[in-house]
Image 1 (spheres, rainbow, N blue to C red):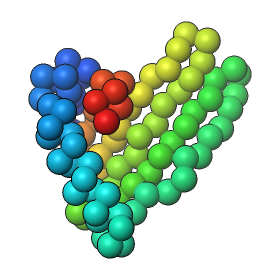
Image 2 (image 1 turned 120 degrees about the vertical axis):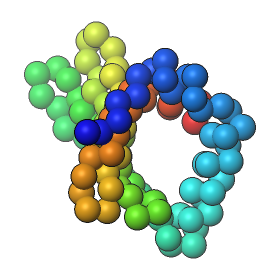
Image 3 (image 1 turned 30 degrees about the vertical axis):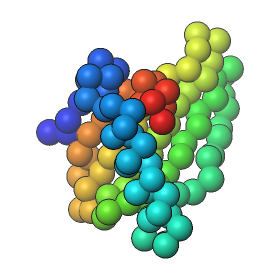
Amino acid sequence: MPLFLTEADVAATLTMPEALRLLDAAARKLADGSAMNAPRQRVTAGGAMLQVLPAALDGRVAHKSYTVAARGATFWVTLYAPDGEMLALIAADRLGQIR
C-alpha cells in the first residue's frame, strides 16, 4: 500500500534546511549524470491544463503533476520503486513552496 502524505504531513516533516540539503544533493547528481529529469509537458482540455514533470534519482522514478483551472492549481508527486510499485502519493503544494 503506498504511503499517502497530506499537505500537513509535508509541512510537519520537511524543514527548509533538509530541503536545501536534498536539493543540493539532487543537483549534484543531475550534474554528474546519475539523476535525470525531463522538460515539463502540458496538455489542455475543457479549460484545465495538466502539467507533468518526470524525474529519476537513486533508482526511483517520480513525477510531479498539477492541474491549473478556474478553481486554482492542485499539485501531486507520485513516487515509484525500481520495480514500478507506487511508493507514495504526496500532496505537493507545500512541497513546492519549500523548494
